[in-house]
Amino acid sequence: GQQLNQSPQSMFIQEGEDVSMNCTSSSIFNTWLWYKQDPGEGPVLLIALYKAGELTSNGRLTAQFGITRKDSFLNISASIPSDVGIYFCAGQLRYGNKLVFGAGTILRVKS
Amino acid sequence: GAVVSQHPSWVICKSGTSVKIECRSLDFQATTMFWYRQFPKQSLMLMATSNEGSKATYEQGVEKDKFLINHASLTLSTLTVTSAHPEDSSFYICSARDLEGRASDEQYFGPGTRLTVT
Image (cartoon, rainbow over all chains, first blue to last red; front, top):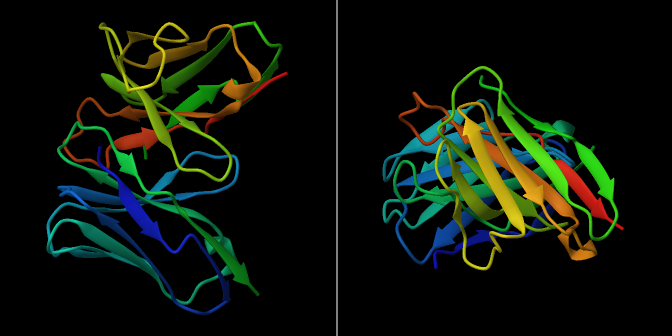
């Protein structure tokens, strides 16, 4: 079945540093989504990408949909303590199809 | 944004009993709801897709007779864990897709339900 490889598994960075994480897939997705999950809560959508090559920003977050449609990255600039959490990528083949989630990246920020 | 609620937020039950978890879309209608399970430090794994007025579609390896899903209205889906065992202890999360939604981002997640089976 479809699988997403997300890296890194975890990051422990200094406040103010930039962060980058990515997801790759062996198969094509037509939509890439990035979510953040705080402990004991459901995921919250950060950015949705619908077109190959698309680069989208949401505040300090920037994500890109890879040109091959098999990868995506998420960057966080100037990290702050509230960025702590688990970040998940998710791919969707078509609208209405199920989401396939990556394993997650645990982000810790040292202030 | 649209809000999805889950009830209860946490539950402890004894082995062998059944537990029902509700997922509600509060301010939109959802023909489709999804149920996920998440074990500690792991990703979300889709269990089943729940469609209003029809039978749920279960993912491979998920027992439909153990995890009963009912999607009786456009705003409510329930997941019943029958004859629960300690290995069913997990974080159960639902998501709901907006009836009017045309884009992938119009799928909203609930806050999750922590189930502990003793």
